[in-house]
Length: 120
Image (tube, rainbow, N blue to C red; front, side):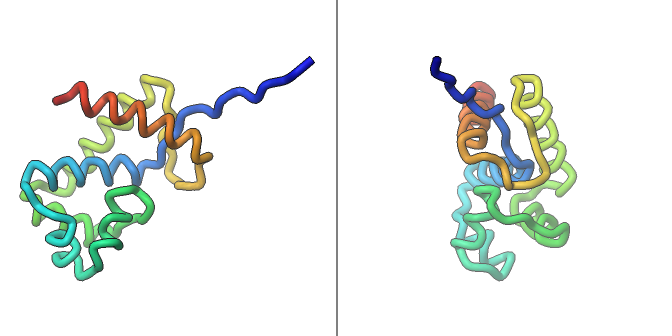
């Protein structure tokens, strides 16, 4: 009798949602990661980690990024909250910590990609 492990529940950290929102707005403004990195006074690779959801940002950093993107910080967070709600409706757990099982995150990111693609 073999027992197969069930796949992990899809999950994604909230920081990854915020990062995807930033990525989307940056792309629509035709800005490069270097542009926002310079505004924050960090390296391009450090900014890349923000968009990937690997690094949290402070309120003041969010404000600087939002100003450069021409959008209110609250609007960026509302957009991330909207994505979080859509993901929850698809059975994806949206957590505050990034210590989520990597396979669960990959599944969550796949569902997020589908949601974002359907919005275009």
